[in-house]
Each structure stands twice: as structure tokens, then as C-alpha cells.
Image 1 (tube, rainbow, N blue to C red):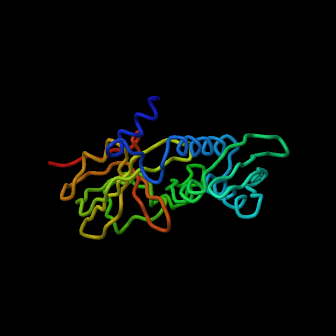
Image 2: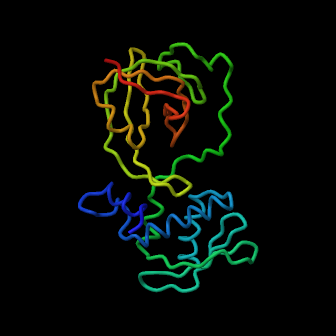
Length: 223
């Protein structure tokens, strides 16, 4: 068993893979597709959808990459991936895998251009939640954690396996969600008073999220 596989199993109970995966081969196939999308600079979600299109219609397209269903059986299909008639690969995908991989959470691509904001919005001073808008950078604020979601497994567009939990923080002016990643999750609890330094506000699925970079930002619990 590889280090990667041991890491995956450590995040699941009784050795089971995290949903929606049912086997190591399913997960390996998904990670391969993520690497292909990254290498060719295409949308991961659109690339995955092209396999379902190929299953239903015989062929799917994502930019200049084509996916052809060469063999379709009751419970699986064999797919050929080409780019400008150059073969990139061929793989077998189970019917259940095709359905499940479209349900995986894919974080918003980092390659999207940042929201343009006025200089007055980029602040290093203490802010209030009601003043935050998408694209605000250098966010410094103190708030209370009023809600925390259960951790779940997600995949980055690069195929990395991550754990994420969203907390909701509130001050006297409003509330906003903050994402906690991997080992951050166990350090924050409901009721904690937290200080956020150098955060950035982004839009995700139509909702504002306050992000805290592990490299440039800081999230700490106040005593």
C-alpha cells in the first residue's frame, strides 16, 4: 500500500475510503483525470462532464480534448482521450464512478482573475464584517465562532486530497464563513473568539467566504 493510500484510509472510519469512492482504482482514475486537466490547462469540472457526455452520446468534448466511449457495457465503459488526434490515454470507468465523480467538490480555480476592488477596500486596519465585499484583501478582524460544519473530503484541481470544515464567525455587524483546512480543523471550536489577520474575501458558489492563507495570513484563538 502506498503512502497516498494509507493517508486516504486514515481519514475514513474502519479503513473505508471517503465518500464517494468505493475502491482505490476509482480514486486513482479520478486523480489521473485531475492531472490531465491540470497538464492541459482545462476546466476540471468540464473535463469530467465530457466523460458523462461520452457515455450518453458516444463522444464528449472539452476544448480541443475529445473523449470517446469505445466500449459501453451495462456497468462500465472504456474511454479514449485524444487531443488534436493525439492519444493521451485510455481508461475504464465504472458507471457508478461516472456518476460519483460529478458530485466531488472542486475548489474554485486559482487561475481565475481576482475581483477588482477600490484601494480603499484593501485595508490593513481592523475591519467589521459588514464592510467586507468580494475581493477585499488584508482583512484583519476579531469575531466569535458561532457555527462549525463537519469535516469532509474534497479534491483540489491538482488531485490533492484535503479535509475542509467551514466555520461561521460573527461580530456585532454581521457574519461570514471561513474555511479551515486539514490540521486547522481541530484547533477551532464553536464559542472561540478568533483573530483573523491578512485574510481575503472570495466568492464561492454565490456566497462570500473569508480565506486565510497559511503562508501570508493567520487565524488564532484568543484567550
